Length: 153
Image (tube, rainbow, N blue to C red; front, top):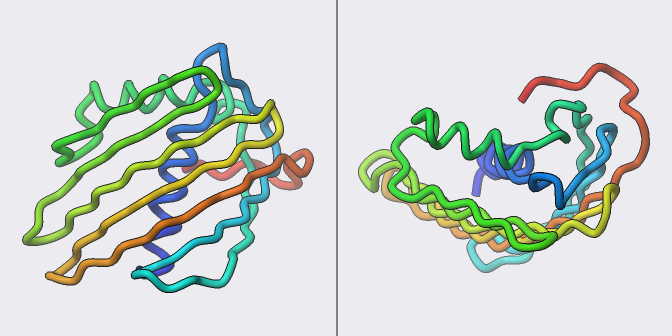
């Protein structure tokens, strides 16, 4: 799977499925993600990234995701489901069409407090007749305040 595509999808899911309503809260600030897993059945090198989460992003992204779906901003998604259960959030998306670009993603994130969460994501992405499959795990932890203003996602 092209790295830019996977990062875009992971970024979208992270930004959209972070904390759930009042039951789940995260601290805004600098977060470090460690991603492991496979692409097309082959292990990939672990990747460590960091990003600044603004107070707005940390406040209630599940509600923002639901609002995106209701406003029709989810694009050509045949399926766009968000479920919250305790300290977990799951997202299932099926968007696009097989002729141009189709992605089928299921992800579940479990929040272990305000400063850590873990998740899994399975994706099947078809572009120009080529299909890429990924099975990823992410461990994320808060590492401190943002050193620069948060980037808008």
